[in-house]
Structure formats: C-alpha cells, structure tokens
Image 1 (tube, one colour):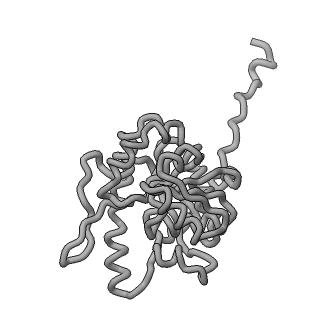
Image 2 (cartoon, rainbow, N blue to C red; image 1 turned 90 degrees about the vertical axis):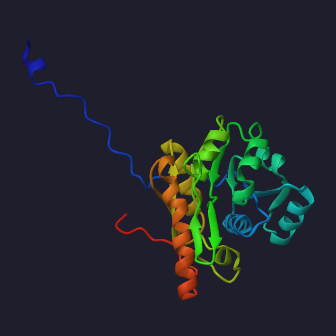
Length: 238
C-alpha cells in the first residue's frame, strides 16, 4: 500500500437538504374538485388571490363556471373531468359521501397528476362530530387505492372555510400538515400551502398516518363550538 492510499479519505457526504428549501410552484395550474363547496371554494379563492392559476370543478360545468365568475381573480370553472385534465395539481375537496364515486369516475383523468386529498370522513350526532372508520384506513388511503396511476398526498384538512372565504382577512394563521409517500410530492404541496400568506406546510409523515390527521378535525370542531372560534393548528419548534 502506498502512502497516498493510506491517507485517502472517504468521499465527503453531500450536505443534507434543507427541509425548507421548497420548489417554485407559481406556474402550476391547481384544480379544485368540489370547488363550489365551502372548503373548496375557500381554497380556490386563497390560492388565486396569491397568484396561482386555479380551475374549480363540479359535476355540472355551469355551476362551476358560475362560482368561478363570483370569485374572479382569473379563476375558471369546468366539469370535474375537464378540471382534472387541465390541472397539474388537483385538490380533492368533495363531500365524504361522494369521495369514492367521484374518484372512481376520474381515474383516467387524474392519471399522472399530483392529487391532494383534504377530505375528512366525519359523522355528526347529538354529541357532536366524530371520526368515521374507513376500510382503507383514511380518505387519503382510499384515494391512493382508487387512483393507482396518480401521486396521492394529503393536506389542507384543518382550515376554516369561514376564514378562507373572508375577503377582509389578509393572512391565514395556521400550519398545514402534509402527508405522502414521495418527498418531492410533499415538497410541492408544502410550497403550495406557503403561497397563502400566513400559512406554512409541514411534512407530517406517510399516508398511513393520514387517519389521525383527518380525525383531528372532529376535535377542532368541538373546540370551535366551545370557544366560538375558527381554530387552526401551529406546530412548535419546527
């Protein structure tokens, strides 16, 4: 062994990627399935107000177009299939009761797309809101099972539709927990959340952990009723 060989050092490791170094998503077209409902409409409004190109989808194109005209900000309306085809990122904000049926009908239109599921499977009775049991584990996991050719993530569960739609509010003070299987995909969703002033996207694990994130909305509803508030979430020390 030569002296050169004996002093050779192993190659230096590449520096760890900064988890807050997120991609530029300003040029992506965002579709919102269920964009005529309160949550979907609020998300569409906030993203469009931040400069994102937004298309809202509905089962009826004329209903989506009417809602888009009311929002302004360059928002367009289309039926769900056209919304899915024309968008780079598709947010699923449909009622839980129609979740599976809607996604099944759009499997081909959503192939290759980044899908962001924000549906919360909840029931309501005299004692308030409670989490429903989903055979696949969660709404997000159901979406992943129904959309094998899409990249499914989960995010935007804990946002107040009232605050999202309030034009007098400039910032939404909350964190968004983002779950998914591929870090590149969750980075995109985090970056999309960060487009909205006051909002921050935080990686929160893989889709198998989506159930407790979706279920937490039942607790927030109880909190909001008790304190007459529109509570969101903040994660500390990150």
